[in-house]
Image (cartoon, rainbow, N blue to C red):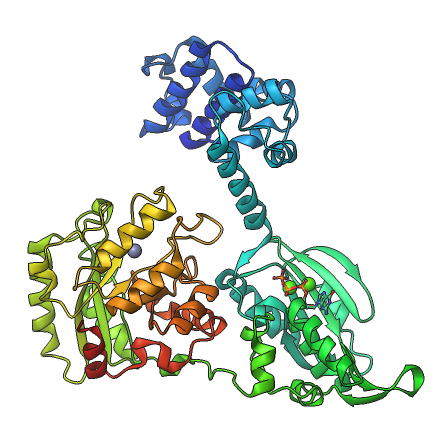
Length: 576
Ligand code: DGT
Ligand code: CA
Ligand code: CA
Ligand code: ZN
């Protein structure tokens, strides 16, 4: 029984949506919306009010009819009216409301004018450019609808790497614990450390007669067994993720690991090379000759497979067919950065703004990770929701850091700020205080809507300020939630190079911003990157590993990253 007012409020809002889509009397629509708000605002639950024998009509905006509806929801957990409306409204029109740009009015128009019943119809109409001509819609809105549809489709099928990691850990331990199982490896996009994963691809070698598949399909978190065979089975876990498991012979283990690590594009390109050498490569091995006479020349280890086709070993993160194969042929693969190359973290918040740990707690946490420096970079005043620092409070923090630093010889607490880049490209704090800091992270937290040209100009203007050091989370995207703002990243990188600025690779698993492609662009342009966690707690500092994954996918070496430097060298780099 829902005694949560929020649930009642949600039902009323749904009723209002459906009424509005079906063109009902606007007063009735408004009455439900208002009731939803009023119920949500009450500190006492509707169930308790009724239980105490009080009359709901004493609440503002609640007449006899709405009072009855509330009582119905409290008693039955549902509302007949809502069910009736759902039947009356055609197709899946209420699903259309999930698109950020669409309210009930627009949904009603789409249905009436273009006969759109569901998200598929909507996508088709948008692709056929039929939406732009509707009154009050336009080309821009049509484009936004398409983008939102695409992002939603992806968000429903791809899971963020950090969320998959825990699932993998327990599943892998479970499989390794099975009597007779020898090797367990997770291949696919997960092994390539992609920021999101479509499904998991697991390989196992086992002793003859080992009932791996029975164990696999009997795993506690299984929702559905999609198929079960002798060498391949697939399950869907309760949280929706699909897992494919393959049992492979030991002689093919390396070839299978290589094949199922992908990417598909990489595999196809390497297969061509193999053919050119008179070899055949597949998930069982590398073979010379044809049919029954074919001789397996490699397969037990990945190393063997690479050697057989004449390539140096390519790290999984690079296997995207983006030039890694040519680099491997020429012996020009980058030596990828590893977590231990880092000496500090250059973006962290404390309780002074929206962090959850105190300054000393953050410093202790950074020290226990083996770092020799940590930059404290609070929000600036424009970020009011985070109680961003003004000049006075920043100066107080500077003093606090100076005092605390005396307790930590050999560890450097760097004085910084995550200063907002304002709409006109100026920085949110005066130069007079910025110049007292060791570094600035300069970020955009507003006006995401600017055109690419204006957004790019805004950022370059900010970089003109000699106190600008690191461009924070440069694209502003939130994985599966918010697209990047429009910006000419090539121009940004070039401008950073000219001015001695750096780009952040924000390691938060929801951001991973710069993405892999832009990391690579920065490296090739000679612009160095700071891999930073943007930690808001001691635990948050642990997210560094995700930044390292992304950096490796972006071909970054130790030398490309500024927080691999000793503090003295770092400070030299930061001095423009
Ligand atoms: P995902 O699951 O969408 O995040 O991406 P992947 O890369 O894990 O792709 P998935 O699960 O469809 O397949 C796993 C690997 O199997 C893939 O990375 C390469 C290999 N693979 C799948 N299909 C093909 C194919 O048609 N040709 C070749 N050469 N390899 C394939
Ligand atoms: Ca996969
Ligand atoms: Ca798969
Ligand atoms: Zn930020």
